[in-house]
Image: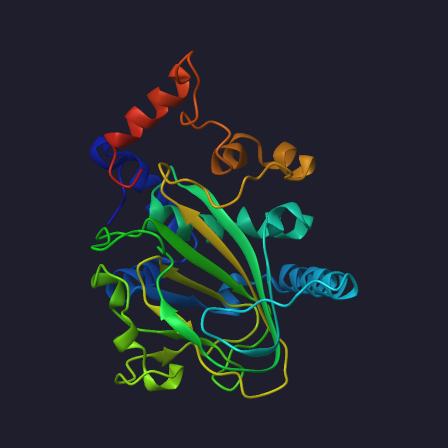
Length: 296
């Protein structure tokens, strides 16, 4: 059907039109039904961007290695080599391009509202063997029951091939509907627990985008080979959430190129954090307008 300029769903109209133009309608259906989706490289069609992100990721890891920075310890995992690289939008310009990419933004806006903000930008790197990362949600810190929609979402650019042997994501299909965090007794055998294994591996080649609802249960499979495994994860969040990063040092070139769109994602127009003068009226009016538009 044709998506009209319906006042009762004004912001959602725009997001859905964007999704249709980008060929994402099936992916949106998969997100609704199963809590995750995979966009293949031929649809993403950003080989050069992925190569640049991988190169920047390796450079940052090598820089930290030379500086003697301690390795990371993913949740419940033991690794030969693992790094979590935080605040990447402020560390290499290429990651800002990925944040503002239409595919990533459209998925983020569908999952967390057209008025969403940027929550975190992080890189995940493993080399050598690694045990599994425990099942968890990306709404850590939110007490159950969780909202029936995601407060955050995860849009991950795969910078290498992801296979079960290479320690790929483990996803529990449909778990976004549970509206709670997994308990210790629900950790599956593949992750060192005793519960039945309801996880499925995300098998996807380099250049794919994996997206999932913040409520979706996920972890990683044990990494059994010595190959590099890396992805760049963007988290978008609802506009009333406290953002994970400060975003103080974003590249000026990005602010100039993407203007108000990026400024909003970074929270530069937020009404929160006011002093005795009170919140800026323009910011409050924007939020009030969004309250009357589903999908905002």
